[in-house]
Image 1 (cartoon, rainbow, N blue to C red):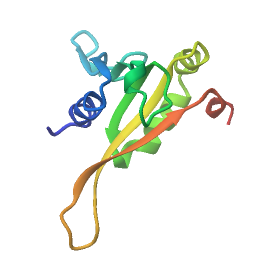
Image 2 (image 1 turned 60 degrees about the vertical axis):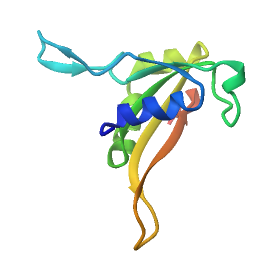
Image 3 (image 1 turned 120 degrees about the vertical axis):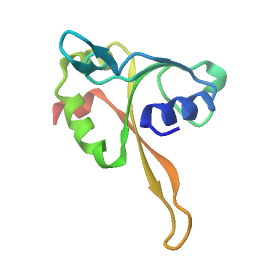
Image 4 (image 1 turned 120 degrees about the horizontal axis):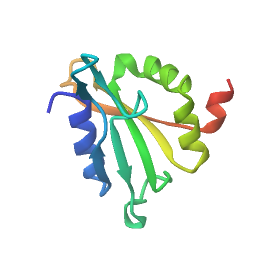
Length: 124
């Protein structure tokens, strides 16, 4: 597993969440990669049994990225009207970034950083 999307798929599935890939598709006409609404890589549905540690919405979109790009992805999402509309109707948005972290002198392991966006984030 090398990409943030692949890591996120495994991470979410291990928590019992149903995940579908909706982004990072090649648009041959525009010659670019496109995500759903310009930000979403994954569409997730969480059952009641999978709630466990998360108090997330039952359906949410995920932006998977590297740790270094977390803030840039957040700023980008906050500028997309469809993202705000998605939150207003009860969906969730999770930014899931990946970076190698660990104690100095120890083996560095991939760790996820989770940030849930809220409608109030769009007001700032």
